Length: 257
Image (tube, rainbow, N blue to C red; front, side, top):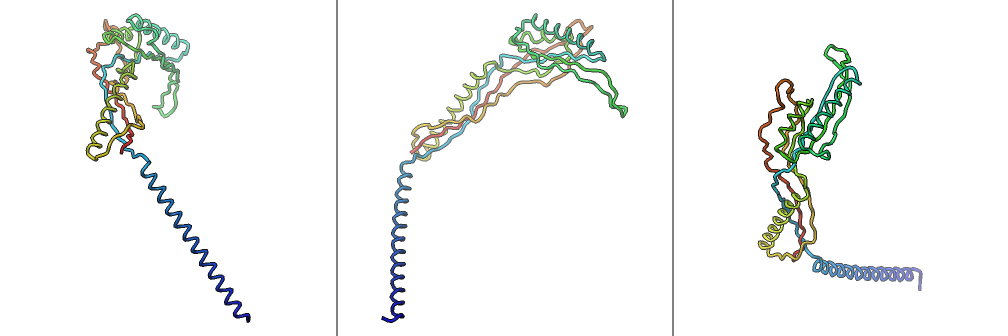
């Protein structure tokens, strides 16, 4: 056998080996594709389908607490003098608030600040003394006492009244009412979807609470009227707390088939 014949036979052998490898690889890939399809089909049949419904619930509650800020601001050059004067007035204000029926636990100091005062109107920084401010937040449970508390506080030296608002002490109970409303609405929505699409609701598999937002009836801060020499405190109209709205958003995840 000459050299040329040997080379031809070697080439034929290589081609046969190559074709065999390609054929085996094709069979292997075909088997993998079939297995993948079977697994995919099985997952599709066994994996539960889900839908998500969302709803917001509301509860309207009559506030049972009024929050009010009362304060005294005093100005002067002598820190010791303005501190003594401010503290004396603030103690009298707190005393009158307690006399009006507010419990000590419902009175909280929220600000005590001393800062220098400057005049820049003449193009230069001119020292004008100090400003001392003390403020308390008062929680009023008897709305009929609001006018009395305001009057006595201003007569005692309070010259700051601010952030007056109505709120609810037990917000969790109000939130629960709003949550119940949201869940009922979400369930009704899911039942409507199932009826219109032919899906069957199996069970709730998850629930998400997206948010809670109380809406406060509030009034912005303002300076109290000086009632000295007027024979009385600040005149206050009849208090109308209205209703407070509590809103909760819910997502329900249903398994369906």
